[in-house]
Image (cartoon, rainbow, N blue to C red; front, side):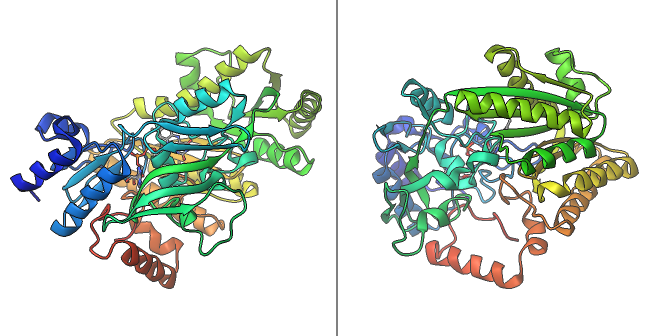
Length: 460
Ligand SMILES: Cc1cc2nc3c(=O)[nH]c(=O)nc-3n(C[C@H](O)[C@H](O)[C@H](O)COP(=O)(O)OP(=O)(O)OC[C@H]3O[C@@H](n4cnc5c(N)ncnc54)[C@H](O)[C@@H]3O)c2cc1C
């Protein structure tokens, strides 16, 4: 759709001339997100500065039936911020103020455009800790993370965004501004609307401010690296550790492909023939961390690890974790199109799921790379392909469909943390019953009767 001159003029009146982009080069920059196979150009990009601006923009859009797609940093991996119906991209980048860090009560209130890393830096200065750690934290915004209910390696011990969300300000598609939830950890006052908006992928309302719960920084941390000849042995080690009563803050799994790419870019002396690496972080009081580190090392050895090392110092620990993060970038840098998926099973089913993915890679003659959060059962199998090669791309699509059905057969689901967006909407009907989908659509209608907010996402 194309917008009228009067709509563009009103948008300029609301956010100022500098807050409106319309040139084709500028619009192209907002036609992508973190995926490599979706693209659609908006008619205009606007940068509001406050909830009132957003309320006015939504009233204008609602009156004119103009689609609005909210965008934080555009790092999502499900096509969530792609403006598939054109219209307005509402980018929250200007709304980047941390409003209040209440250290006495362990809460923070912030605008949604605040980048997670900027928040973490402020919190660290005050000895405070916000655990959810999507590995895109250098760019991802609080609004995007709440809307995707993002998680990361710390989810095993500390949970994901929804576990820290206390309250929010949100603007309905009609322009009405709502104050939801509050500042207290306990709050059972009516339906939990902040929780409903958390993970709603920008389809119900525009979140403008959030209040999040904080913890105190753990006084000690230790990283341990364990190397295995077989993924199943690594899976067994994870089970033994969790069954022993030790709850590591993180347990991350990398496969042989990732190990080789890490050694090419940041050599850490990892054995190139290793089938799997587990990377652990233990945190808490120093004495407990020491005991738990010893426990993890012993249990990995007993489970059959070929090598186990505790990081020598925080610098070596940081190198290991940087390698884990760069594993993901290595995947994206290695082929023109990457289908990076996000399936979840119970941790004990991980070896089975991995074996099925490996069989698929062989049968379909594809490279499928596996990185995952081994402790909580969330795997990211990434199929390397090229959308310009129809035969290869077709096999990649088949592999993805097979991976989803394997996860469902093993009692899991089709998204642990990246959401449904465009990427997985055709699989939703296999994961949810028709009645659940009907109810979800009714909820959407109650919030957004005209269907202007992030149209085309979640269901077909
Ligand atoms: C290298 C890399 C590593 C990643 N690692 C992880 C990981 O470990 N864990 C994880 O969970 N994800 C991960 N992601 C995915 C992504 O970073 C997260 O989904 C993140 O939450 C997106 O934040 P964003 O600010 O980029 O949001 P965007 O991508 O801009 O938007 C995401 C969705 O939220 C909606 N939205 C954004 N802001 C608002 C708002 N204010 N109100 C309403 N809706 C809104 C958008 O419409 C869209 O549907 C990774 C991505 C990359 C590229």
